[in-house]
Image (cartoon, rainbow, N blue to C red; front, side, top):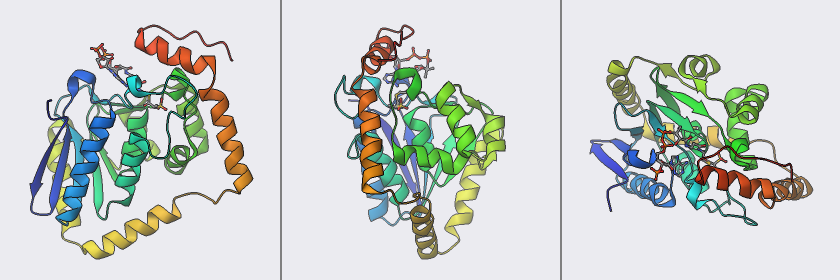
Length: 260
Ligand code: YXS
């Protein structure tokens, strides 16, 4: 089995490179587990900064969740303990800075992954498309909060309702990208920013990141609101449209949604 990711460690700077371009670096459970294991290993070695990237020159940074692994019907497609959600929590809880270095297009759950990183640096080939509505997936509250926090609710709604990519220039203007740099500069720029962080107190960075994460987690929900959200989501992933969305993707055709 090929290595789905490549890892590198130089002093306290780790790098994880997505390495499955044949399947557009889609976030299969195997890929998610490999990234989680790499972060666990870096954490044991007290690695303070981790860069997550794809191979140079790819057109697709990651095509998002592996559609073949979406449950066909009747089960939550994005459960709390699912591979994507576990990976996103691992990134958010990692006791150090995680920088997403983005070249190429980012799709679906991979947007949520990058948005959960601490700093995003992209080149002009970077773009972000949130496509659950194209497939018929209801998404989930913890994911939606990430997009509201970064984009504001209006742009977040447009991103989810249209499923259209946001290009690099607009991503920088919207605050998705911390920095937009030329392809030939992005590696040096990212690594020099990482070095600046490495010069600072790792204890302070860990405490500050934890506070950001707790403050960013959104307002508490009442039990009834939480149950209502689950009922709203179940109506969708129990629907014919959900099954049609997955089938259409697998058959490489446009879905025919019927609203039921
Ligand atoms: O046909 P083969 O075996 O060569 O495999 C093809 C694709 O099936 C595969 N692939 C994927 N497999 C599983 N899950 C995926 N998300 C996925 N994306 C791609 O990779 C091989 C090459 O794909 P191909 O021929 O389409 O490449 P391309 O260069 O022409 O187009 C690249 C993309 C990314 C524009 C295209 O692959 C695409 O639109 N992929 C799906 C992007 C997407 O909608 N992702 C969201 C997945 S669902 C998800 O993330 C969440 C559950 S949610 O929906 O809630 O956001």
